[in-house]
Length: 624
Ligand code: ADP
Ligand code: ZN
Image (cartoon, rainbow, N blue to C red; front, top):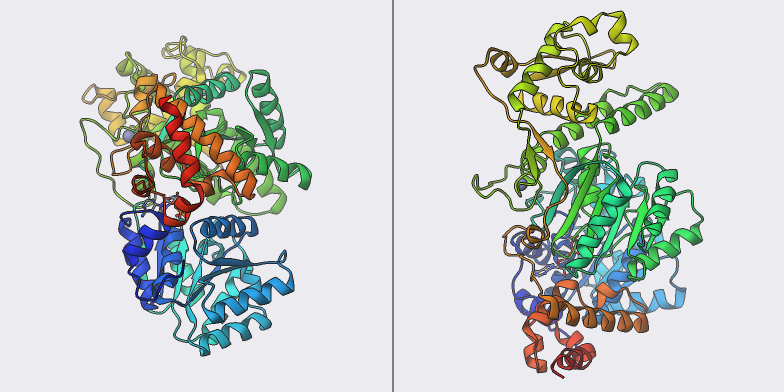
């Protein structure tokens, strides 16, 4: 369906995507695109960046060129847009010359609105000529750069070829460049603006908080059982989504996948050491929803566009808060509630420190920066404050959280942590263990003293003679180490790093606690939240999940099956047909006519025409 150049933004968004409203930053980003101004938009994963570069071409009637790093993502996006009746194409190595020529012709004659291409292709001399001609013909509306953090060596996916994108400026003077990223750090942001040579760029920074994610930390026990329980918990509320489990090593992924299969889950391993074919088949199965659980190293990432990942588990603490944010970011891309579960043991940090130390020795580099990142991650885990708030603050944004009710979407605010009944005593003993050993030892030794261990180090220094030796014998070392981390984050202790060794010293609060002038409360993560709590997760920010009762879950399953079969027929991933959010709304609203169906969020005119009948029929089957 042709869209005339006078089409307003709102009308286009409604007609093509079936959305009634734009999210806050989307409006400004689209305006910049329409007016041809330079702009950098920073929105978290799932924040709705793609709409920002897809809409302007519909309004201006010109063509937007989108630089995108991954062929697989381009392909899925194009198919998704086509299903919406939006004319888009991708130019990449898999496209035959004949087809490529047709795409270019389409750009000139107005039958194509958007072209995705890899950055290295955009900067070839051949393509530059085409861009120049498009520009001269007045057909080039804008240049969008997706995953723009790839341009920065400070980012996590540095791709040097992104650097050359600023050459496009010369070819198409006066055409606006719109960059998009989910990376929150100011350094990367500044680098993007500089490397792309953006002029008077409007920088739009959304909130980094992902209200639909529930963050949890659990003390790691039998991890396969903990993971299986979490997966089943999600299955029991019928959310029907996928699970990604991140492990530290390749070997871990294979062992754990095997354990999960033995526990009756549909799981497979993924890491960079597998054959290309095997990796492809795992990726495809996961995307097509024929595989529920992928146990992977961080190699499983960028190409994963399954929007209904409902659970991301870290079987080990990741190496930085940035990595944690990035990896948990793959949960709930559709904006629906999802869970991020971190299985933590205080020994995780030690394992990372050893790895970092080894690789620093090999390469002769200074590990200080990496070690700092580890400590920050560990602090985030152990602090036992609201996780949403802690994450936002880490990235330099405050987050207003109601003191009474909390965020409603983290283990701490949901009251799933357990207050240590003996907080006062435990804190006193740990602090005096630090004091009596002369403030010269690290957490491991302090824990050993408090637990009454008889290590060589303890015996040789006669720390078994101290009155505090063995006073916390009933606590596990892992638990005490976590309490020490909490004392640090509360300011009762300070960690000092010398020669790569960490020692603990008193902080201001520590002195007061020892004198009995101040109290601290120590907490433990407990098992998982009750199912009841689970149902209320997801913060109230206008994107609340629609909760389905048991009967509705049956209908939801039926619609999912229909979606899978349509997706298979068309050779697209299921989420491209309709998102989970749309399926849920269909179940809830149960439209009986095409007009009613058009009111559902995510149903545009083209999808109504293609799939409306089938879905209406599947919904109607309920009444029999
Ligand atoms: P990003 O690229 O920022 O990770 P996407 O563009 O993939 O995010 O959008 C995430 C999800 O939000 C998609 O399912 C998309 O359809 C949905 N979405 C985007 N904008 C809107 C909107 N204005 N109203 C409702 N849903 C939206
Ligand atoms: Zn919270």
